[in-house]
Length: 190
Ligand SMILES: Cc1cc2nc3c(=O)[nH]c(=O)nc-3n(C[C@H](O)[C@H](O)[C@H](O)COP(=O)(O)O)c2cc1C
Image (cartoon, rainbow, N blue to C red; front, side, top):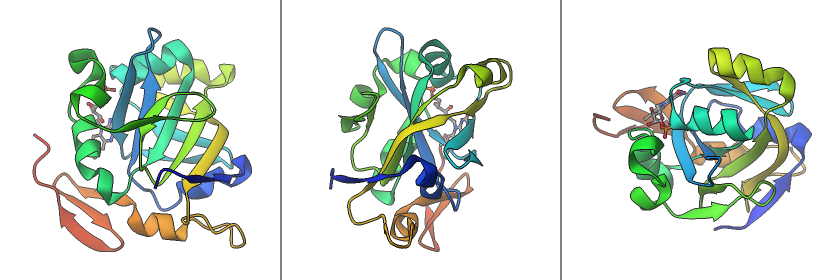
């Protein structure tokens, strides 16, 4: 479950196609891990995903300080972790993995704690040219340093993440997500 197949950085954008809900993992300058839910992400270049972030989030402060983050594609198994991470702020609860009982694992390239069992992850740095845009507008454009999909979910021949996207969560409304075309009620976030 925790084994991953490496995906070429030029193909990393395919891990995001279809608009899955993601979890953005980061760490503070003091090394405290954090993670948050994000629905507003897509691809800017083949190896450059973006996420639109509220500049007041703990995640945003972390990334302004470290210029590193990981985008994790979350499957239905991570529904509760995704909702928790999207409801509380790291600055209020400290280590969100501990506070939310989210099982973590270190991403191999950057060593950032990510939710174990996620469907795929893209380890990113923020190039100097995009830092002012992020600081001022909250538009976070990453450069993929390494990417991987959970074993069995990446078809190397077809360059396809189709199996992963069938398990990914997609935002439908505040109380509904869809997975594999099925609508699932998640209750109120508040
Ligand atoms: C389903 C869902 C999608 C979300 N999408 C985004 C998003 O795209 N951008 C954003 O800034 N916040 C988004 N949020 C809100 C953040 O995840 C939330 O405010 C979180 O508590 C921020 O955590 P932090 O302060 O520890 O970084 C979303 C929340 C949920 C539940």
